[in-house]
Length: 562
Image 1 (spheres, rainbow, N blue to C red):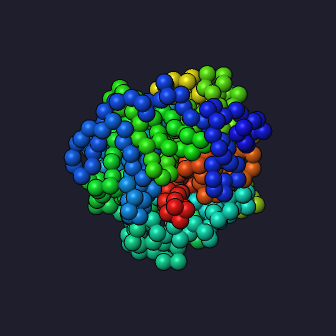
Image 2 (cartoon, rainbow, N blue to C red):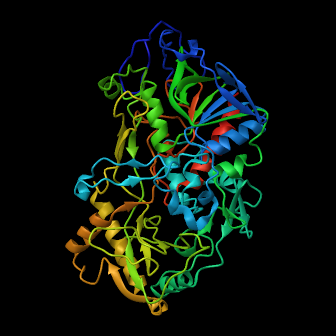
Image 3 (cartoon, helix red, strand yellow):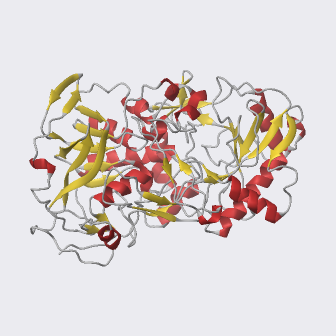
């Protein structure tokens, strides 16, 4: 019998003994039917290593890493540095689109072949509206299409992880890794900041004149200027710090693997969509994937790492029979390990927009799309800021509003301590169908309250004297939106997202945890997760840096345990 976390005991097909090791839940897995296992097929594969293409039936390496984004890239590089061989399965293609590296062309990447282009399920709180969720489908993952903002979060974010059962993940524990991964220019306080890591971080000192006015307006509204929000405390208005070097975006892939792409122990397979983890007697031994229309296999002599993101990782786990048993059966998948937390705890940063018509044309070419941010409290008594508005040189479309191109600017008031929780689940057993995602936006009243307060705070900033030469009028919400009922309606109509989904394979020690504090999947040996899906709670800032930190730690754990 297999020990499970959901209280259900699942039979083991074809027998098998309990895996060794100190896993808290020593679940026993299953051998796949040889008639259906692609291990038995002679499928052929193009292996790219040291620039040489060669055919292979089934690839094998020390490790297989699924995903090359914020979490996967550091895992891959650090394992190579340990002398390990690595196969990388990346669903997307090469990162050679010229808009990837151009900071002011980020929005051109949405809805292209570089974007998985998820959509949420209809949101009850939004009148049935679906929300677009761009996710990177390219080497570098979402770090190749995001806003390039480099923010760690608040120290209390990580301390709360540790208090909740993620032993070894307090701020004191992760600060050395946060310093190790970055290369800050110009240098900051060495007690907090790193200067020799692979990921470049630029203090954005050369602000657009409008952005400089936004900083002054926030100060006039009563907020202090914060010279480094990644140091002691992020509170206040600050210049955005960016993952840019020499004027170009640097994704996690380029930061960690740019100089190692032709490494003799590295095999990179773009266009390879992982569809299930192969288990033998409770141990992960390989990954089945689809590439060029063929099902193929990458086998691992050591551990397998899922770094497919908060949507991709739980999708692969569930397709592998690892997840909530009843839900898997409903789509025709035989459960192997009953982990009811897989796909649960989905949450995201939400935002709105406050838009002004400018008195003069705005030419923001050559500037990053976001240059100024504010960390603020939506109410008194908070231990950490729950709002992170950022400025922009444009506005996203909304029914009933006209935003003249090149003549508008915005604050995007964002809620970074959301309480609402949703879930992800399989649409069907077809691995090529995207999973269903429901973030349950605004299910909790606190989220709506915070979002409305963020709208009011940024409206007040927009009225300050520092912006008088720019501010012709407030377009959205507009001067007629004044009452709380009107603000609530606007918040619902304008709600969008920072595109920071997390938490769907969360770390912890309770019955709904999916991975332990060393990122090992419960009930399976040889399988870890290294991406934002393991976050117990979302950090109070952009999620990219925290995901990179998780990848660094995953590689440390693998090296220490093998």
